[in-house]
Amino acid sequence: MESGTADWWDDSKVINIDEVAESYGTPFFLYTADAINQRINLIRESMDNLVEVFYAVKANPNLGLLKAVRGTADGLDISSGGELEQAALAGFDMARISFAGPAKSSQELSASIKRGVGCISVESMRELMKCAELAKQIGIKANVLIRVNPQFLNRSFGMKMGGRPIQFGIDEEDLGMILHSVQENQAHINFQGIHIYAGSQCFETAGVVEGVENTLRIATEIESSTGLFCKTVNLGGGFGVSHTENNKELDLQALAVELLPILRNFHKSSPNKREILFELGRYLTADAGIYVSKVISSKESRGKTFIMVDGGLHHHLAAAGTFGAAFRSNFLIKNLSRPEAPVVSCNIAGPSCNPTDLLAVKVDLAKPEHGDLIAVLKSGSYGFTASPLLFLGRQTPAELVVHNGEITLGRSPKTILDFN
Image (cartoon, rainbow, N blue to C red; front, side, top):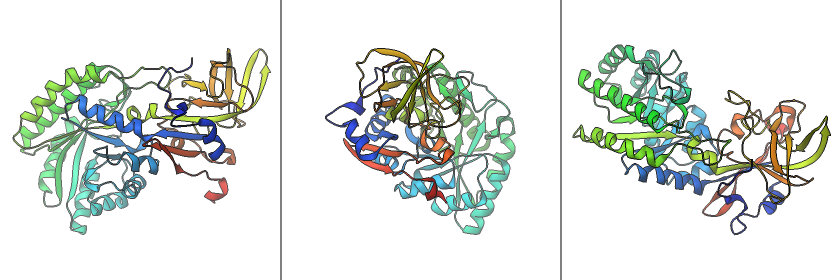
């Protein structure tokens, strides 16, 4: 089924997709930072500016995109030393960085402390003590959040990242021990607050509200039992947005109605200023990108039509259904060259020698002809960097960024030789 979503990519006043393909070749990713910035502003406004919005770099770390959202996002959520360097290169204030991940190396922790990263989410006692040790050696306090693995399992999230045995965070029942260590190491540790990431792909407002209430409860209990102050509360993210259905996503306005009273009460619970933030990736970026490839060939095989294109799972593993998907489901897809052609049922196959290299299976699509441009919609997240880019040695796609109506090259194509 083809998308009815806002066709920012084929608005001739902004983008001529044929000229883009001619200039940069195919395949390519095309992202609009303008749409991401609009969504960040919408989230803040809907929450009456009671929350901040951090952009989760893992969803799309393109440098051009990061630079374009720098003036709008309140900060960045990162998960590696590489993303830390990318954030610095993009010009982000290090004090507005939150660094999470269960296996941070000493080098990553040291670099974070030296750069003044605002929040290092510690996920184990070892990591806390390593922060204290490194901070003492460096002579700069480490700014830490305690990432908590809550006892409550929030079943509303598609991928659950808390409430069960998992590598992320400190089990809630073990908080007493690590908070005692925080108090003992205050000469080297700046305790900032807590971080809970319940999971991803939640489409139910009640699920998000339940998770927020649980996080604020834990923060309040920490404050009352230890005297520590949770200046920063990272509520995580996981707002649901579908790649396969048009207009299916978490209802932001409905969420705001339920969440605003809770947030207001928590802010009022202390005379000291608090920072409450959501870290969002897919919800900001998914609908802000497309992946475009060109039809190379077609064939019939035992009653089924296969359309071969020059892009595939090596560039967009998620669209091929093999990145974090419990079952195969087509991303929304569109024939940009002839959208009004009669609709046919077909399979869109990539160029590799792998039978799973299928960007769409049994999809109803305006009949493609050789040379047509086929777009995989909702491709702004977990595309380029979540794919096996060197598989079969094909050139990587160009990544293009639309900002203020202008297209810039966010990342140039590379051959396998460029990686030697």
